[in-house]
Length: 171
Image (tube, rainbow, N blue to C red):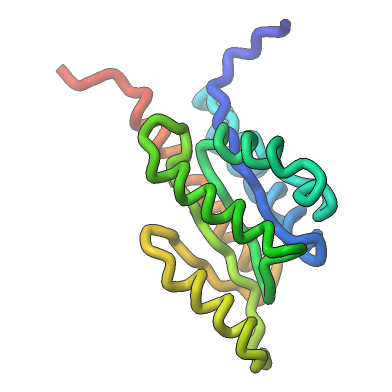
């Protein structure tokens, strides 16, 4: 096995299939933070997630295990929980993992795409449930560039936190 010397921290990136552009924007944002801030400190934020919604249905156990192994969880939503509400189950699993000190999960963040004309009561309730989740930071965006900037700030904060933990204690 090739030794690379990087301290790797997994980031589970979750977004239903109709948000593919947003998912790619998130990967790009984290990649740029890796290049500019994480890698010079021998840290690497590694994104993992599902390339398609079908995999959440067919491989629930493997997906759940992946979530449990991650240090950070990024959820992008607009109007629903995805097929069979399974993204909801993953989201709440991430919160449970964050609250379990024996697991690596440190932070769960949500990025909600703007839906200014939405009136469907189920969708409005879905969005409200996310916004009222205790201990979860919720960011709103209307353009991909806003999403990218917000996630760069969030992931930059993660890197600063990791670097701070790696520093030797002051004498």
